[in-house]
Structures are given as C-alpha cells and as structure tokens.
Amino acid sequence: GAGVSQSPSNKVTEKGKDVELRCDPISGHTALYWYRQRLGQGLEFLIYFQGNSAPDKSGLPSDRFSAERTGESVSTLTIQRTQQEDSAVYLCASSFTQGPLTGELFFGEGSRLTVL
Amino acid sequence: AQSVTQLDSQVPVFEEAPVELRCNYSSSVSVYLFWYVQYPNQGLQLLLKYLSGSTLVKGINGFEAEFNKSQTSFHLRKPSVHISDTAEYFCAVIKTSGSRLTFGEGTQLTVNP
Image 1 (cartoon, chains in turn green, purple):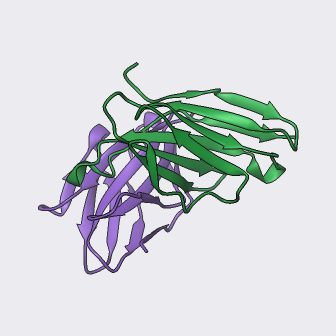
Image 2 (cartoon, helix red, strand yellow; image 1 turned 180 degrees about the horizontal axis):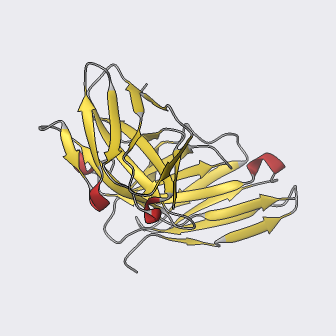
C-alpha cells in the first residue's frame, strides 16, 4: 500500500498474555521506528531499525518488550506477559534516512492495546 | 540529549481567531525541528519542518512556524483557524547527525464555532 500499515488496529488482552503488533512500512523506507503513546501523553520512543538491525533500542521499557524486522520490511513488536501499564497506542513510523530527510516520519494509525 | 517542551497542553479558540502553539527545545548541538498534527482517529502527519535557511517556514493548511535560535523556540501559528484544525499538535526535534526524533507531549487545539 501507499502508507504505513499496522495491525491489529485494536487489541484487548488479559494481563499476563503475550501480544504481537505488526508494522508494514512504506516500500523503500530503510528506517523504521516504534513509539508508544499513553493516554494524554506524548510519544515515547521505543526502538529504531536501520534495515534489519536495531542500532537504538534504548527506549524499550523492559525485557518483556522485543522487536524484530525482516527483509528490510515488516516489523513485529512483541510484548510478553503484558501488564496493565502496557495499555497504550503503539505507533509505527518509517522514513528515508538520508540527511535532512531524517526526521520526516510517515506514521501508521497505530495499534491500540488494552490490557485488562 | 535533546528535549522538547510544549508549554500548553490545551488551547481552545474560536473559529477565525489567530492561534499560537508554543514549543521550546533544548539541545547542545544543531537540530532540525518539526511540527506534526494528529487529527482524531488518524495517524500523525508532517505539518512543516525547519532544516536551515529562512527562519520562517510555511506548512500545509495555512500554518507557519518561526525558528528562534536565541530563544530556542519553534512556535506554530495560524492567522485564522477553522473547525477542521481541531487536532493534537506535536513539536519534535532531531539532532542534525541523529536518527531519533524526540517529541513534545502535544497540544490539543480545539476550535469552537
């Protein structure tokens, strides 16, 4: 498609379950980002991919969170043993990474996670 | 590390009134600056950006922003707002050598008839 696609758009899960969130970036975008947006708060950086490697994963809040990217395309964010504080909208974005184009991110509509 | 402060969490205005959404940043190195907008139930989209050159930058939908290096500010303005401008607006900064965009906490602009 033309834009960044995320699935599922909504996910309700029980505390302690694992969840997987998927992101399909814009074709040709080498950089891919995951951000978290809690209700009423700003965007919190989680992890950045350049190609299939993650040079910056300093934003992952705990070892329950992991992410991977394959084929310089699709990325999956996995949250194990979900907690109620994980409830948020998880946003994926992609971009080119050459010079001033860095920072011009194209966002998906997000995956809203609710942990009961 | 760089940081962004958006001074107003909520800005209510009447239709056709002017508006200014304030953004201050902190960084020890050169940065690029951005404003993103998030309309209800949509993803974020780029409104405008400052990379270099003229400190007054124009974006989509009649918005503009002015980069003020001495005051480390990048305030967003529109001379006359419409109901359709109701949205959350995010200021963001990235080091010119960096790869991570840091966002402010957002300003909810509500335009009332």
